[in-house]
Length: 362
Ligand SMILES: N[C@@H](CCC[C@H](N)C(=O)O)C(=O)O
Image (cartoon, rainbow, N blue to C red):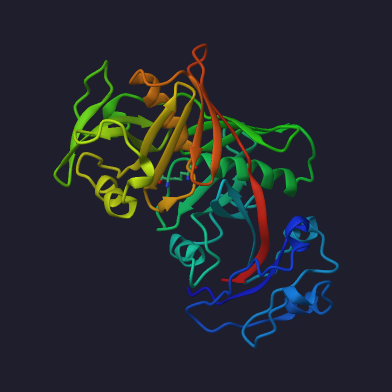
């Protein structure tokens, strides 16, 4: 099924004040069309935000509140909110009335396209909880594959749920994911602290075919990628991660110098990773301060990866490079990560922000 059109984009108040053109023009692979939804934008507060080309309309809604917008259920339309966590961006879909995602992986690929779609690293569905949990979170990567978990995504998920349920202040939810139970907590300052559970270190469970060399884990193990021997530590946070601090040629990476687009896919599709892998390239500033760049499975280079930052701190501890509590700098900004000795759980704290509201005909 082709995704036909973006009907409108509405901007949250902090963005609405700006007269800059926030939303990139939406073009679909099929022709654009409009319907009655457009009449909601007949009266615009800021004419600068309206693109009145025949193919598209962008405006600020005068009369629609966020909650009533999200309550809408016109058939044939998908209402969404785009969020980001440090630039790792997602299309959030209210799927609380069904255990089937409202769109297919193929449609998700189209929506995530940055030139012909809304543009995002993935689509996240807020679904009914199972086994006594409040909610279920499912996600499609921008390539249509379905990962078990998403760290930045679950922070966005928590803020999305609070918006849907009209909740304010400190809130915590139990969320069922492919990685098991995840517990995000919205804090007073709006940041979200997430109990990400225990890391999985057993090599065959990550999964990696690299031989275990420390207990059952692959720690600082050699892997040949495109003729270069890299040292990697493999960690699963429900989804697989391969963390590297260096290779034979350079033991300590300067991550800004890496050609991520060239090397990332070679790790992702390496035969040692039967479920593919996310890969984090890390530079150590101090025992409490790391910097990483990430090549994500199914999404490529992204501005941030929450599960990746957690895996990085676990790997840094295992390799004796850092303490259990670190700030991890990502291209989109910092995350605070703690791998607690008491319960073996990893805790991640960071922001999640609304970008805009919109609808597409599907
Ligand atoms: N960006 C996410 C991870 C999303 C899933 C990943 N691409 C995978 O396939 O495992 C995060 O913030 O954790």
